[in-house]
Amino acid sequence: DFLGAGDRAVALECLYGHGLALKAMKRYDEALDDLKAALDMSPAAGRATDIRAAVAGIALSTGQIETALRQTASLLAGAGKKEDRLPAAFLRAKALLLGLGKYRDRYDDRSRGSMRLEAARMLERLHASPGYWRSKASQLVDAGVEDPLEWAAAGTGGFVTLLIADSLR
Image (cartoon, rainbow, N blue to C red; front, side, top):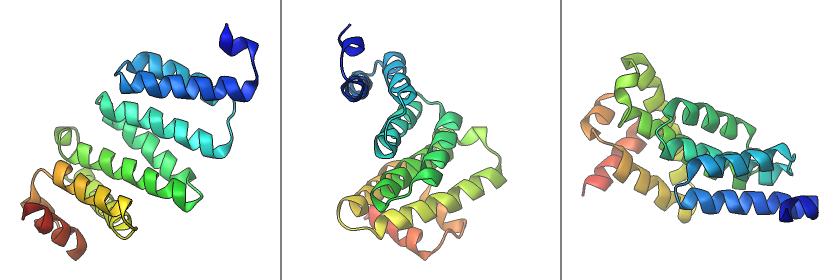
């Protein structure tokens, strides 16, 4: 009732906020309903990016890795401003690392090689950014690189090798 009775912008923000709250409580189906309803209201570009990032985060949290990979690729491709690109790169790197780790059996060697190279580019982009995103890149490596020797042998570049070596100290 409240949402139908008020201003469209207020209704959109209520749906978005409620969706985030439900996501935090791990009530993912309900969160997706609210977030998709908010997207259906044609929010401004920045808010739409925030909503799509939350939807991709739910896919990651629920183990829908293929969906998460599609959504994060789309999110990254649509990110125009720098402040949108870094969160999108973080989500993309996280999805790729999950695909290479926990869900690795779903992909052949060639796919994993491509995913590893893209993850390395995302991690390098994040690590080159100031403060917050640099630390997030290190956290992703610490949490997401399950087989450091495989990464080193794959020739993903000196940067990732150094980042992985640093995480092993």
